[in-house]
Figure 1 (cartoon, rainbow, N blue to C red):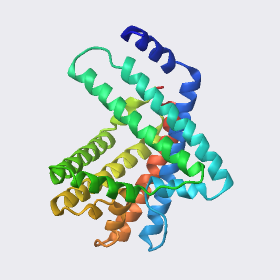
Figure 2 (figure 1 turned 120 degrees about the vertical axis):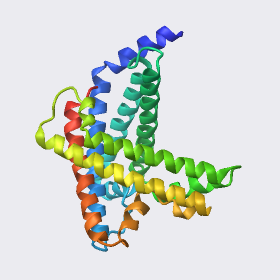
Figure 3 (figure 1 turned 90 degrees about the vertical axis):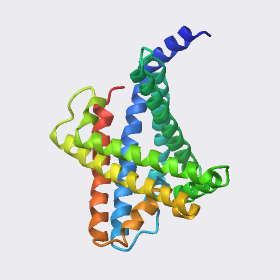
Figure 4 (figure 1 turned 30 degrees about the horizontal axis):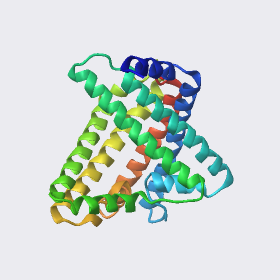
Length: 266
């Protein structure tokens, strides 16, 4: 199969109604996970909540009952659909050889990797196995620190995560996320998207700072992911207020994701 055959196959896949449907389901399940993360964050704000304030905590919440497990299996299909759609988009959605085209392809591949990881996590929880995002982040950081130049690598990861956070803030502030949609989702969905992207950007910024601290101090345990980032706010002045704001932000992103499942360009 030559390059042209691959592009034609990817184009057919991208336009297939089944793949479009699965991708839209994926956005809806992502919305549910963000609502759950918001709920766990709210519990953390008031000194409760035994679950991690991240995707593993949200998935664990679903795995605790029969309906939740059904939703997890739906999530596996949805996230796989999103991953395949992003891969198809990387092949056919950015024609040309300029910097912008290659940047679009790289972003699509990056999103595909994220959705594949989500699909795998949902599959593990659906089959009765669990994972801990916070522990995985610490383990990943520990392995990086053991490599030559490990401290520098961890700091670079932190800077990259902060960069993604800044991009989310920019995307929310300028309402650039509307470019991902095929039509306008309405005033309330737009407001929810704006608040949600801002909150996610701030959270990612804190995650990046924790990575940098882990690299500087050569202590993998300081890189605690989203759960650690949010729980670190609890000990700050006005920590409860900050966490409530973040909880609202994650819930807002969840609401936007439900709207995105209907209006997204897929």
